[in-house]
Amino acid sequence: MSMDKDIYDALIIGAGAAGMMCASVAGGRGAKVLVIDHAKTAGEKIRISGGGRCNFTNIYSSHKNFISQNPHFCKSALAGYTPHDFLALVESYKIEWHEKTLGQLFCDDRSTLIVSMLKNECRKVGAKILIDTGVTKIKKSDDVFIIDTNKGQFKSRALVVACGGPSIPKMGATGFGYKIAEQFGLPVIEPIAALVPLVFTDSLKASLKILSGISVNAQIHHGSTMFEEALLFTHRGLSGPSILQISSYWNVGDTIRINLAPDVDILAELKAARMSNPKLSPAGFLSNYLPQKLAQFVAEISPEQRLADMSSASLLNLAGAVNDWQLKPAGSEGMRTAEVARGGVDTNALSSKTMECRKVSGLYFIGEVVDVTGHLGGHNFQWAWASGVACGNALI
Image 1 (cartoon, helix red, strand yellow):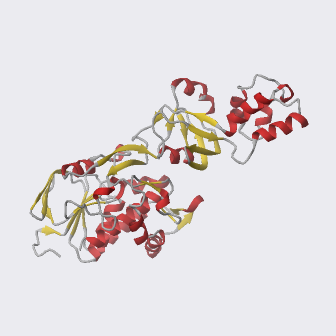
Image 2 (image 1 turned 180 degrees about the horizontal axis):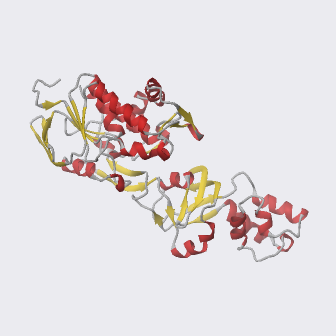
Image 3 (image 1 turned 30 degrees about the vertical axis):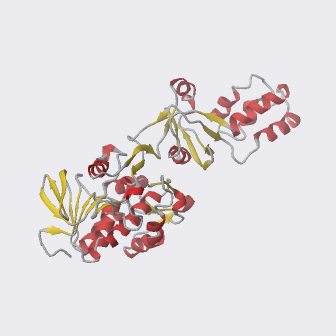
């Protein structure tokens, strides 16, 4: 603990999931902690997450659910603080929760209960949270960080950057954390919108407009990566969990492959139907497996009126349009609607055990600002909790 009463042991920039978690852990170990945030309220991304119910973790979360240029970096922190550890904290506050698909845990009630829990954890250990506080300048003098803000100057022996990435700018998100990294000579991997809807080219957008609002269970492939969840057609392109997942791997110019009926071998079924029901139309056949409008849209590639009139090549083309639709999106909706940013502070510059910079003692980066991006479904929150705990334990 600091001998100088005017110097904090740790100043944390960012009163989000990672920042408040880190503050509560460090404060619990006796550190004098201050958390500052330029936003009007703490934990805004927590509040809006999961449709206002907060998908606060995933019980199956492991390093396999994260994307990073160093896929091993997140292992230590995730092992040190597991989904069950966070769930125990949630239950200690008697916050009721439920599990949705694929291990996703949500609050039964509103997500602000998680925000209140974290604020209370900070309050219990004397960690202060100062909101509406913008940083204007940071410098390091000897072993002390000097942080100038619109609320005055603060000094701290450790500086923790937990201000997230630039996704969802309407919530006040910025790339400020990357600027701090660059100021201190840390490499930053260019942030790209992730967990984001993909958009069609103008010509494809016009032809697929009639499908807006239709949802199907689908397999989405990008290279060797595959996700099977709901796919949603929108007026701009494609969304839904499967698309958001694959978007974290997709780059402009890449082709994705979509299986609109993953449980059905459409070619085999077509061949059988041509024998058993030769007068059936292609659209009529496909409506057994796809929503009617989608079936009609796909069937338009087959000029034949009846299955009996279709050649083997036509059957193959029609089956391919369902089981292996190859599509090159024009782009994504960008940071405006992205849930997270892929990329961030290069993990090679940080300790995987403490999140401290290797070349700048006392400087730490945690949460989304780091080049660790989770899959959809509570994994990014688990990274926030785990990296915050790893850092908090190292601060004193």
